[in-house]
Length: 251
Image (cartoon, rainbow, N blue to C red; front, side, top):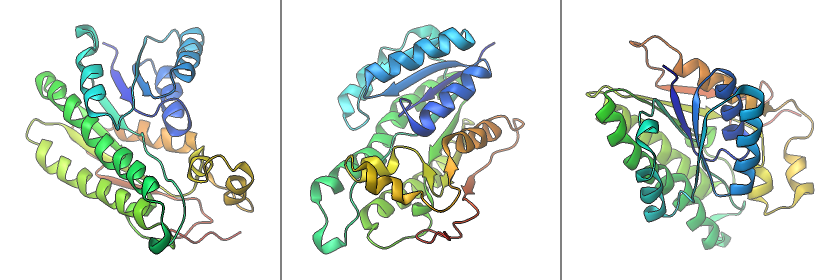
């Protein structure tokens, strides 16, 4: 039987890379993002190239009622969700705490923490009913360390780290696996979003060294979810060689 994977933030970056890799590996895909037009292009591509079955769930993870309504609308034949990849997340701004933009703070907290919680809370009962499941939370090296002017973003990813460990403790009795992947510098739309579309500033983040790419993280997620039934990868940190710690890159 084909397995079903639910990926949030699937319209670009790590989420899109996961969608392509798992389509290639014959999974059925439930893909979420805010940008429906991008999801539709991706769906068409996956169907054409891999013959994939794809269900689109366009919603903003920050909107609690929309999350609940969308997941409740999933057809019965799609409700046996084997894997949930909590990928939706972002950084906004880079400023010291005394001059931080509070709208940026709200967006990061609502997306990275509350959005992850809303999706998980609505998917977990389906996994419990199915007596199986694996949740992969996309964290960050910023959830293990801190760096200058990363205050609130680092705080949200520290929260993801704590939630990952708490979920593991709460859900083992069902048993549902819970894992985290914590990347360092990955070249996606991350910096473009952080700097609100300033492509010149975003490009400079990745100059002068070989950064990770989205496919590197998708490959790690695939490895995590294909371990034997008795094996759980609790926590995985992945860094480019040039980045020994958060906030330091050897260029």
